[in-house]
Image (cartoon, rainbow, N blue to C red; front, side):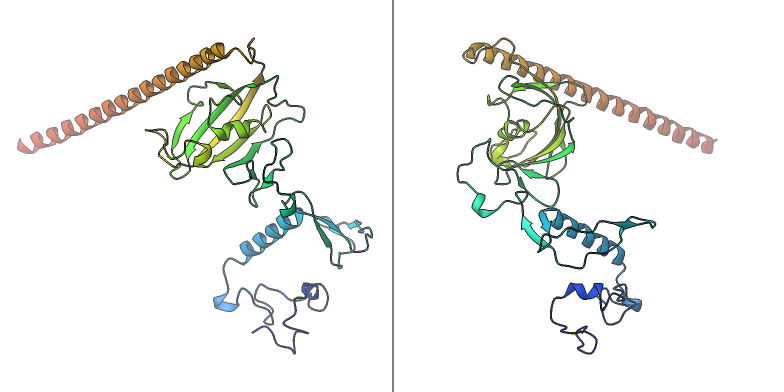
Length: 312
C-alpha cells in the first residue's frame, strides 16, 4: 500500500525531498490517494490537525538541539517576501549538516566523578527540565526566569530566603507551603539543614527565579519518609521562589554552637507556623460543621411544620 512504483520512484527509499519537488502537490489530509497516512473518507482520522502540529513541534525541538550548517558552509538566503506571514523568498532544498552541540550530552564527555563546577547540565527530556545530578534524582524546570543581573547563592551569600510549596508526585497533595501564611523560610546552603535536592537546586537559582524541583526519594526523605505527611520512598515536587540571598549574620565558619542555635530558632519558627496553620484548619472545619448543623436544623424544622399542617 502506498508503494506503487507507477506513482513513486524508488518507493521504498527514504526521500523526503520528493515532497518539495516532484510530489509537492500531495496532500496528506485524505485528498491524495497515493499517500493517505490518516485514511480517507468516512474512516479518516479526526486528529489530523493535532498530529501535524505535534509533528512540527517535535521536529522543531529536535532541530533546536543541533548546530545546523550547509555541507559546503555556503550562506543561506534569508530574503523574505511579503505575505500574511514571513516566508523565505527562496526555500531551502538542500540537506543540512547536523553537528551535535553541548546541549545534548555525549558519552565521551561523561566523567565518573564530575566536579560541581564543571559538570554540564543535562537535558532530561524534551521539556525544559534540567537534570542537575546526572541520574535523574533532581530535575529542575524554570517557571519564571530571574533578571539578567540577579545574584545567586555564593560563599559570601550562603543564607537564602525562599517561598515554596511541596506536593506528593503520586497524589498531588500539598504537604507543606509558605503561601498560606506568607512566611519566609530561611536556611544556609551546604549545612545539611534541608534535603539534598534543595542544596543541589538552590545553588543553581538566582533571586527572583521560580522553578519546579522534582526530587527522587534518595534526594529527599528516602525509604523512611517523614510521617505523617510524607510516606516512604516518595517523590516530591516543590515550586520554589528564591526571594533573597544574604551574608552569614556575623558568624564565622568555626562558630558551630551559634550556628546550631540559629537552626534551632528556625525550627521553632517553623513548628510555630505549623501549629498556627493546624489551629486555623481546625477552626475552619468547626465553622463548616456548625454551618451544616444550622442548615440541617432548618430543614428539620420545615419538615416538622409541614407535618403539623397535615395533621390539622
